[in-house]
Image (cartoon, helix red, strand yellow):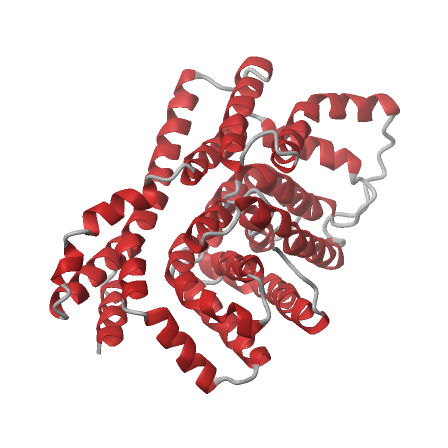
Amino acid sequence: MLMGLLFGSLFFLLFLGIPIGTCLGISAAITMYLTGNIQYLNSVVTRLFTQVDNFVLMAVPFFILAGNIMAEGGISKRLIAFFEILMKHVPGRLAVISVVASAFFGAISGSNPATVAAIGGITAPRMLEKGYPRDKVAAIAASAGTLGVVIPPSIPMVTYAVTADQSILSMFKAGWVPGICLAVALSITNIVTCHEYDSVDRTKYTAKDYLVRFKDAVLALMMPVIILGGIYAGVFTPTESASIACVYALIVSAVIYHELTPKILYKIFLDSVVSSACVLFVVAMSAPFAWFMTSENIPNIICNAALSLFSNRFVMLLVINIILLFLGCFLETQSIILLVTPILLPLCSFLGLSPVALGLIIIVNTSIGMITPPMAVNLFVAAGVTKCTIGEVSKKIILYLIVEVGVLLLYTYLPVIFHIPIGA
């Protein structure tokens, strides 16, 4: 009764088109009131505040701001120029560069849409000039953008770590495995399918040409080294690294590259404030929902029910992946993490996974969800960049979707089969 009312009201409100953050808060409040748990309502406001009154969550707005500064400040443009000359012998060069540059950009911004806009906005016009079909270009940009949240540091990794009470550093360290696997798989796919549009560059470059491109990009290349090196060396925390990323990107873009004007800065800060507010609102509104579920022992009830239905952990993992991919079609990443984490965490011991490994499976699933309509944020951004329709992109994205799901299944099952520990 109670569980049916809680989730029934949640999905009914979602069906009405109400934003997910509001749905989480209202469904929890309705269930508390109708089931006579009025005493819980008195602490809802406190829960909302304490959920976002968290030092770790300060990393979210800072990483969003750093990504926006990179996109507008010329950093991503110089990265691509350097990779273009470095990968001159690779077939389908521009498509592969989109993947590599997206992985590099994701190692700083931690956001999928920001990665698609920043990298796709630069590589798409060049691919179109080379004769790539417009819908293919959009699919390349959208699929490469999924690396934004899988390559650490990552905003969803921070959200999961806070929700599951795990170490952000452990999440960042473990995130490289699926991130690199996805980047390699997408690069190989592009080499095989795009060599006819973009053959090997036969231009003779001198050592001076390489040096000039490297010198122009060295400050951009150093950014993830400083940020991630500082985190792993223990010089600063992930939250502090996010603020350092902002300061570094701001100094490089404004003082050295001279690409930031007051008007551009205003737009960057405004976009960052709006994006941060959207994420943190959902995080705050998830607090009473998750707290009420825990108080009423709902995660354990669902866990026991799942164990009674699926006694085989391999089947259970497949079902979990299918459910997460389905949710990714309709909900955005932060919402899914906040919704399913309390439910799936009790299953870790049965599945043979650490909480960190489970978190990465959730994050990879939700990242793939960003290229599965109708809630395909990456497709919307890529379609806007390339000026083509969602329907056209959706047809071309199928190949990349299959490749990414294949990597997801390998990452899900191989550690369990071969007892490879992922995360502490």
